[in-house]
Length: 328
Image 1 (cartoon, rainbow, N blue to C red):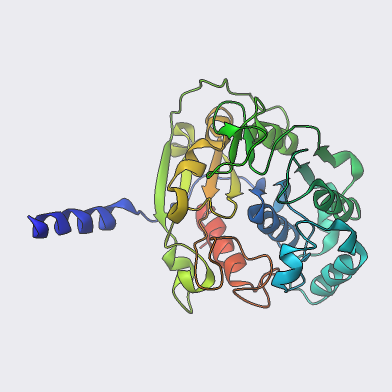
Image 2: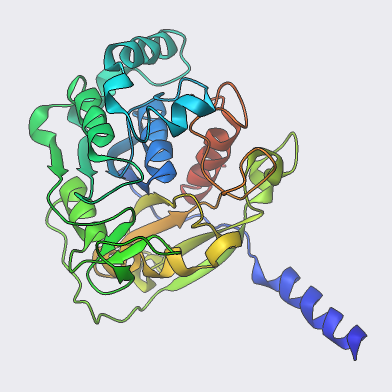
């Protein structure tokens, strides 16, 4: 009996993960994230601004805020915005751009940026998020930046139909607030999107794919990455329809190893994707000894180059992006 169960487990492991596919995707790639995922989305946007045309950041601070220091990350960059020097962060941004480690900052000018901070957020306080706004306004045309600070959300992804109480934290960090954060963010970036109803069903597939192949020098977990990620493919995008790619970064304690596929299923992106020909890529971070909460690397636990194109997580996600485009 034990041998039979083991065979079933092994069969499930072998067959659960597929290879990430390539699709008919145009050049309008965007990113979003919550908490550590917001920091990661910001890093990816700034580094890949030739390809990424917009970003939505929920409860995150400015680029390179932690400056490679975990104590700075958990103090200034979460609780004490008065300690954040945006001019210093801009100087580091320019140094990276001058060295070719990120794309030229001029690419950011026409980006669409959506910035959200819940008025009750006690984990990453609104003042830190306003520093992110200040940072972006140094590069992005002001009319392209939309900010939302007046929704009474604690720390979590706001939805219109799923999650815990809006003003309290919960183990999934998804809050039912009668506010469709995923739609508002994507609609700001792309414009003219159809809005799903709160009871909308799904026509596409949430697929578990192998992330291991995107990390070359060491196992994925060495860099705080899971061996598998998720991708949502609307039924329209499984045919010849030309679709757009959005990369959604979960927050700490929201990865597959912590809550399974609940963030990928319930954050609100898939319903928007179904109606608007969007493919949603959900890369998955994972806990290791230097990253016990399964956060994205926004302070340097995986590499000193964590915030530029040479960062291991940044490179891995770039390869996933290129695979969906048929370029890797």
